Length: 254
Image (cartoon, rainbow, N blue to C red; front, side, top):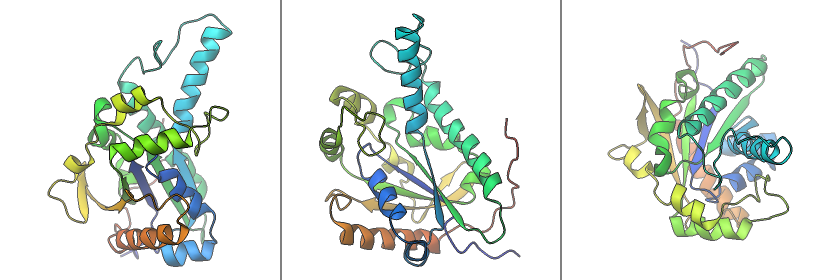
C-alpha cells in the first residue's frame, strides 16, 4: 500500500473577503522551504486563486464597452454577474488549472503543495454549492482551512486594504460596502460543518478541515502569533491528511 504523503498536497483556503487568506499565503511564500515543510507540512507552494479569473472578466467587460462598443459578457451595469452559474464556472476553472499544474508537477522527488483560495457567500450558493464542483481527484488530496472572522471584521479590513491604484492586486483589492454586504454577509460554512469533527463530507469523500480563528487579526503585523496559530492548524490537518488517492490525474480535462 502506498505511503501517506509527507506533506499536505492540496490546501483549500477559504473564508470571507479580507479575512486573512492572502496574508497567510504571503507569509508561507516568504519562509524557507525547510521551515515550510517542517513546521507547516507544505512543500513548494503553487497558488490558485479565483480572483484573477474574476478580475479578467471585469476587465474584458470594460474593454468590450469602452473600446468595442459591445455589451458585457459577464456583468451587469452594477458589476454583478449576469448569471449565477458563473460562480460555479470559477470553481470549474480552478479544477482545470489544478489538473494542468498537477501534470506539470509529476516530477520524481518534487514536493508541491497547491493552495486553492476562494470566498463564497450564501447569496451565490455558498461553500456547499462550490464544493459540489470541486473534482474528486482534487478533494482526495485536500484539507480545508477556513479563516473565521465575523462579517464586521471582513468589512473593516476590506475597507482598510483598498488601494484604488491597484484594484487587481491580491493583497490590495476590495469591494464596495454594498457589494460586500449583499454577496458575503451570509456565510454557510457553519452549516456545512454542522455536526462534523475533524472531517466533513464533500460529495462522497471525507475531507479534513480546521478553522483558523482570526477575529483578533493575527494576520496583520503579528507574525509570531500568525506562525504559531497556523502551525497548530496545519499540523492538525496534516495528521488527518487523506490516504494516497487512487484516481489518476487528468492529462487533458477538457
